[in-house]
Image 1: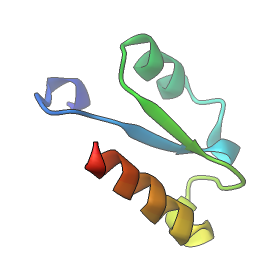
Image 2 (image 1 turned 180 degrees about the vertical axis):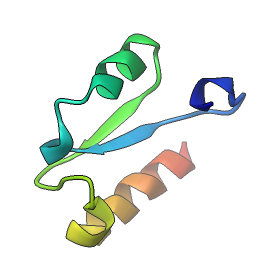
Image 3 (image 1 turned 90 degrees about the vertical axis):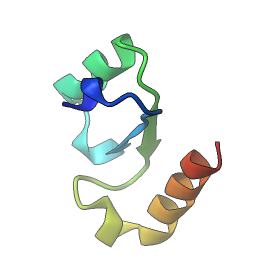
Image 4 (image 1 turned 120 degrees about the vertical axis):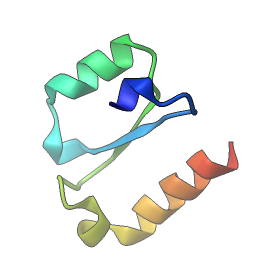
Amino acid sequence: MLYDLKIPKTVIFGRKSLPDDDYESLDRDGIPLKVIENVGHSMAWENPVEVAQVTSDIIKK
């Protein structure tokens, strides 16, 4: 489904969630990836400031 979207895409991962099979396939397919350090799957609770900053940076592009 993600691949079908005809809009710019970026996927955000928490470093503690890696390695992840999707990380490698998304990167291979040219979808930009951002990694937030010291967080896992619950990154919005673990580091909401960094998630907000990364999201803001993506939107500004």
